[in-house]
Image (spheres, rainbow, N blue to C red):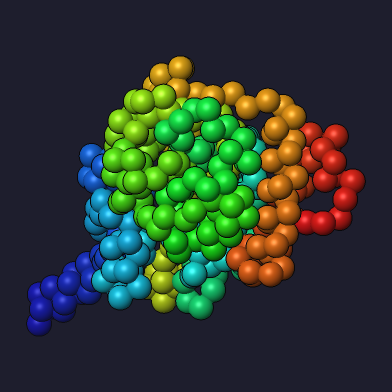
Length: 334
């Protein structure tokens, strides 16, 4: 009897001492290079760290962003990594970080991501209808790629065919605003359309240059207009009810700590593009673009309801912090 009691106590103590089994959750990760891609690599390290938060994260590689998004929507994944533009229907606030002309530099983007990772007010805005944005990965400033580098002003874009994300209200509005022709595209079709001459221009960030083989479309006198249109991001979104309390805050802090790694990827991609392909834009033209972008942002905020007012206001504060002499700093439009 004594031995039986001792054995029972031993089993009980082991059961009490045994650590709880971590939950397993899946995240669909879009990376144009698949499992060998830099962004899948970032998420692999993220998943390892997440195991210390009580969640075993299984990451699934997708080379097609639309499929990753649809699988998340269908419940095939508990989380997803996709561009803000793609996820804007789930969370307008998070997607608005990519607003046209919203953030000019990577320093401003870092300040914005830091605010989103540390502000309680921002945390509340990043949750909507059971979906929460739990981190941002910068993928680079968005530039306009043109097959004719002589096309370097807005009037010259009138009548040109531009590969446009049809699911992005901002892009559709902007293309119409400048009098260009929208050719529906997504991240999987931009490369072929541009390279085959089906469109005259497209817009992507530098890390897409090599995977999408855009040098082919630029080969006959094309160029990249060296003026950022927006800041592209990959955003990590999860279903709230699939992850434990506190996961979102830990996730945002972790991915904020990986900002430098992502920035190195961007800077290397921009440096690898041949110098002769970049087209410098005169300062006077940039000021005109600034004014045009402001008008577009306000219209998209008020008329199309595509941009979140709070996000636009914070981004204006960051722009004016960098350059207080900007005309918009004396205005109260955003």
